[in-house]
Image (tube, rainbow, N blue to C red):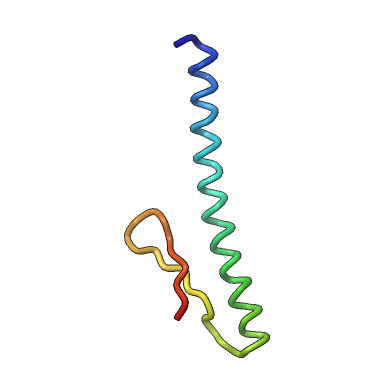
Length: 63
């Protein structure tokens, strides 16, 4: 592998990590926004819950 290939691969890995971190923040704020709308429309306090089940990934569960 030459230096250009290694640089492109490291750039790809860093962009994937940044995308994952931004996705976690967006998912959390998105769920808060859905809960806010559900509270305003149907008076439900926790419409969606973001649960971290011991893994890195979270799941959206309806209660």
